[in-house]
Amino acid sequence: MTGMESLSYEFAGSQAVAPFAPVLVGVVASGNLEVLVEAAASNACAFKVETSARGFGAIWEAVLHDFHERHGFKGVNVSINDMGATPAVVSLRLDQAAASLKQEASR
Amino acid sequence: MQWPLLAEQLFGTDHAIRADGDFLSGTAMFDDATLAVVGSTAHAAIGVEMALRQARVVLDTIAQHPGRAILLLIDTQGQQLRRRDELLGINRAMAHLGCCIDLARRQGHRVIGLVYEQALSGGFITSGLIADACYALPEAEIRVMRIPAMARVTKISEARLTELSQANPVFAPGVQNYVAMGGVRALWRGDLRACLRDALADSPTTDERAHDGALRGGRRLAESVAQRVLAA
Amino acid sequence: MSRISFAECSARERVAALLDAGSFEEWLPPSARVTSPHLAQLGVPAAFDDGVAIGRGRLAGHAVFIAAQEGEFMGGGVGEVHGAKLVGLMQRALRDRPAAVLLLAESGGVRLHEANAGLIAVSEVMRALLDVRAAGIPVVVLIGGANGCFGGMGIVARCADRVVMSDSARLAMSGPEVIEASFGVEEFDSRDRALVWRTTGGKHRFLSGDCDVLVDDDVQAFRDAAIAGLAAAQPLSLDTLEREHALLATRLHDAPEGADAVALWQRWGVPDAAHVPNLDAAELRALVAH
Image (cartoon, rainbow over all chains, first blue to last red; front, side, top):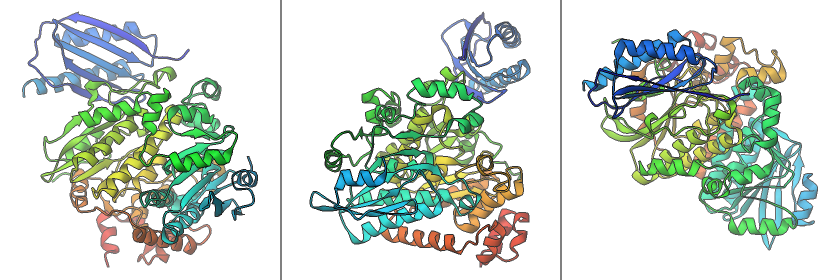
């Protein structure tokens, strides 16, 4: 059966971020993903993943958890469209997004 | 339907439409007015030469017969797949044909497209889809690409594409789907002369296809997305 | 001044590089999530912007509208939403009358995953573009991506007032693989890169007049060409179409059967035609400047 898999995770955060315009990194292509980061009125960093590579929930949770350990954002929503990126590429894009986010927030 | 039978049903013997190879052209009398007719037959592949032959008829109509309506008879397998046509800029020749038809429309010529057998892809974009409105006979088919080629490009299996082509309006080649999506204004059934008469009287001069797609439910987003851009 | 490759930039990066710094205002941006309704059923991920960024900005101080197709998403293929964004941009241009509409085209044409919806969408883009052109607003198409500009978008491109290409870009209808699959490797060897670029690449298109301006793969060169495009409005008339017709008909009848590009260039009076593939854009422009 074809179709997308939807995954959601949320982690309590500690690092507030100054208001920022949405940030987009990456592109939806084979082995790649796009990451959209937006401000949210919350104390969490919430992740919403749409992926065509089904059955990797546990790996997503680990990768996103590691990202959250690195940055600990709160008041941030991270939305992902994924087309089978490896964990290394996912982490790379997330860190690129975090760097862009900090740049945006310091404007 | 074969073009001679179609011509007879539309015009009786009152026409001078001729086939020269796959190229159709000529005139017909309809309701006391002369109609220019141009198109193709035998599922013609549209290459540079065919595009230019059709453009010539449109240009001559604009130059010599102000106000004369133009009927495009469409039966094509799409663009000609030859290196020579690509070398010579088939996309430019097709754009040229499209621009000629578009100018005819702007200068007050009613341009009606009729898919009477099949229409594919580029061969359709450049003719029927740039008319004031495009119509089709009920048994006609309109496709973007044949399934084997589509499977190669999309990496979706032929089986899956065939399955989708049966049930899914986005994939199914039947012209009913194109009506639902707004790409075809209506099907011509029964009295073809009445259908042509209505088409000449009623075809819009602005592009209403996205609106039709929304109204008919076959393409729900096109109109609203364009409107959102206008309002952004 | 170091050169930035236009081909290697994403769609949004190209927009930022082309327009005056910081002037881009995007409409229906990714955060609006105006996405394709047709892809999920095929197990294909959507893109937040459906593969095209549209909006307005300034170019050398002039107000312009701009659209940039993201070639990496679905090969830049036009689907229902993607096409509607382009149509909306064109319709808005009729209302707001910017100095120009810039279309950064990188596309395989109709998005096959959306089949019928994509085909109709491309046609609507074509009609809307011709409306803008008829209103005297120049439409400038800039082609510089690795995927080139093919299919229905290859037709759309040639409906514009001006086409700008880099020497590494391609503009055509069918890709060489499709032609090879239909008629064999003798018809078109899709792995012969030199042949592919001689047949459909920027240099050949420049020599044939299928593109108006040839530039290096350099964002600054594209920006300069876009600025020059502000003056490029050429509304269509019977006269202009008759001239185009004569040019195309002559070219068709003059081209010997089985001709390769080099033979055509020789017939067209290009000096030292066999050497053209080795020239860069500036050298080629200089060669034919007289």
